[in-house]
Length: 227
Image (cartoon, rainbow, N blue to C red; front, side):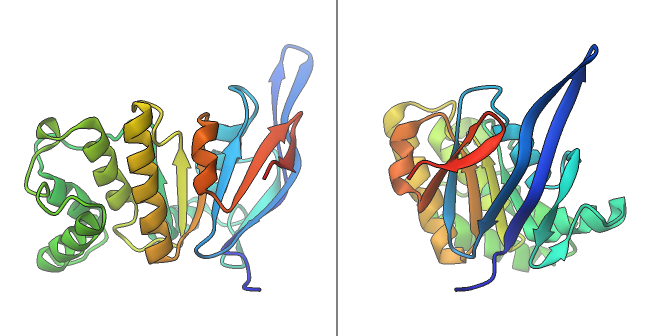
């Protein structure tokens, strides 16, 4: 079995309220391998976002470590973690946050340009990803000309534009109707498989967990397998 691309070890996250400590993650361990799609479920406030933010190097945990391709991440300095986020991790959120003045192709090309890729190559990679997302005929449209599901598929392509090894998604279809959610999730999973990324995806929609290899839940601060 391949080594995990993302490994979470003894992760702890707690918050202080007055003289009380609220523990939302209590010694959590998790491995996600290349091409594997792991779902994360649980009610609001259970700690899903805290786990995603720690795994994505956005929010420092209270304890434990996150390993990316075998290397510890939280022991690195700010510059090192920023470099990891830019090169190894792609993020998809509930809101797509596309830039309305750019068309779909250039929204996907932009993070590549920031990383220093020439514009011709960046647009070529953007076109490739959008075609895989079923948006070949829509890549020259601006976000207001796209449906909600199309905009979110652009956001997914953008998250994978710089070739990350890890995809972190927090309620990526939370604003979509059920039929559109199915289409977007199918596109996300297909692209994750094609690109071989390790995907960790939080969702409230249990119907979508049928697409996932494993489903984990946070129960009183512990991570338990659901399917």
